[in-house]
Length: 311
Image: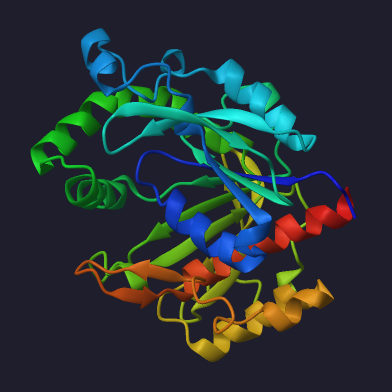
């Protein structure tokens, strides 16, 4: 077992679902063993300064990427950092925070894979890629309810940010070990808890052999859990698809198979002992259970635990 922290990266555009994904993974691994860091804290300018300069938070020049990279390197070797804090509510900076890494470190944010040095710090790299129309719904909901914006302001900001999203955020997909895309079924609206997920599993890291429990054939679209081959950014990949209407028994079989590869995980591999696994807030504020989300969180946690055995 390695003594250094295992570091997970979760990168995606604004409101792509990074925080929701992180919560369940941290719950599964044990909150006392997890340090969560947001790379948005490394913004160079506050909200007022960005407006005056005419730069978006997504642009590399708007972030201290060199300090972020240095801090990731320190965390990887188990050393503490004095991390800046960007307050999304006020748009200003709060006093920095002394952070000592726990056994696991989850690093979420916009530009986490933007430098070679930063990418080298991660054991597992995830990229979130929901359809843009769904991400827009999520961003409008979050920024109007939690950050004090009007819908018109959010839409105007997204329009202004689009060139930087295209130039700097989406290209980071190429560095990910897993690409996660939640999407609504063709015959329904958003419906949060019933979103499907498409997981691109790149051969950069050893994934569990799911062919033992999932039919390796995406042509059988009647099955709620499917495995197949595809190409992503012109490279061959495995693709695991899980529909929101999958039943508890179908999901449990896959969960137990994933957990069974790491024996001491099996006891913890259920939603009763991990209540945050697969939990998502619905459109009217209710808490819903999403099996695709739960399986995604579990698979990522599996990779983090596997990394403790490989290093």
